[in-house]
Length: 259
Image 1 (cartoon, rainbow, N blue to C red):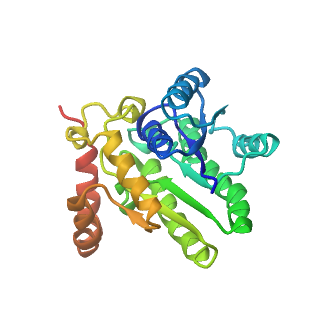
Image 2 (spheres, rainbow, N blue to C red; image 1 turned 90 degrees about the vertical axis):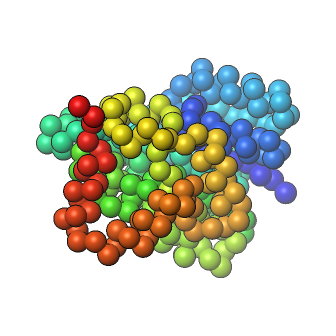
């Protein structure tokens, strides 16, 4: 049985570790990110260690046509995608009306639109073949509004909702959709999103541990995966009972920078 996974944001962090896990299990890969050089280094590592086939596609996912170009490249190469892992995403810290609008638009494109487009392109083949898995990387941020990261939290709310909806639509197609909702993870996300000094990231988990949690949940066909049980309890059982203004104050406090 073929087992080729396409992973976006594979040049670092959770995406890189997901690629390693898939290769360790003998699966072939299509690695997608902006940095072709980083992808080539990873491809060489995985090919040498595990003897798997690795294809590199360098694309900027903030471009509206990126999903179509990625799909067309796999079709051109005759690669059938059995597992789609939408990991790429980024955030940004600051008061909404002070932030650069083009940065927010790129964030929405990468975190929501390109992810949706990739699902649309690749799920059709999965349904036709009656086999497939989708793993979309969201965040615990998806369960509440996020003052000081207003757009980022909103994009992740979309990912969590969208993934669960298509999972229900695919229940009789032998295709599963899983959404991974990690808390703070020690990746380049912090520096890229101007989040240094935010207390929330002081106890960030390792990318490998988060990747293992997400990959296992995907293999088991779970709907939602959390890597931190304590956070899951708070989000599912405590926050829904609190007044909305109290939730907003707590959410903002978590994103305030020290000093």
